[in-house]
Image (cartoon, rainbow, N blue to C red):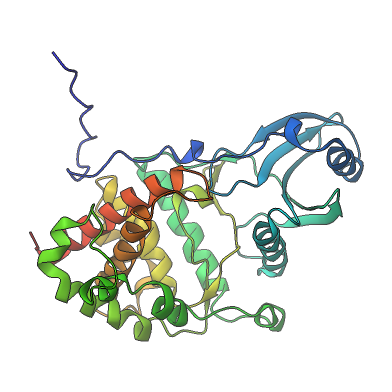
Length: 338
């Protein structure tokens, strides 16, 4: 008799594919895989030999990222990418370090310590947070910590310093018009309906309308993370949350990130509608702002999941499918669609 798949935890919406193991999505080199001259340069900058290296299990890039511990007990989180073979990744790491260094003090995020170039690699070093990724399904206390951290960060980023403005932050509204208009493309016959989104065909006109409304809703002068998800959060030993990986910030409304993060709360069987309504960042959200965000994100993720092989970690497609299914399921539940 064939074994039955495990039942979802109580309250988890039925029909979703299994959630990714977000702490094990990466496809990264380990410390021993780095060229010896590069390891020597990093050790020299750290002030001693590395005796332990805990490679980061989360994320979807193929760059090196690990917490390094030296013989004298110092710990640091180090990322490195090859300047020729991984130029885009090196640029992302450099931008992350620059932006993180300019964040207001109130933002709970790891800060960069130093950067160097050695053996054709860019190396950036951040303070190492004693923490771990939140668990899925979400534990309410950990989700509350993450939402509290985001509320604090969003409040601090409503008014930006001159230095942050000089970095050149893109506008979320422009990104949405360029990259999150997949339902329109499906309706126009420019893209196929994603195979994981068959129910969407019955509501394609509504999805196109919601997606099209979002760019106007997204005009805002505050800075948001724009990649706020469970694997970009750490819970420290006190239970407080830290927001990591500030590579993609843009100018937009904070409620967009709140909605993006709460997709995983909905998939965990929690009352995501109530959590969204109660969050400080959503006070200025338009009545259908959440629905518009869910529509646009679902189209973006589900189209990506169907795109075939990727140069990123293979788990990216799993993340996109599961996230897109959850966003679409939440939208269907909110709208009473079938």
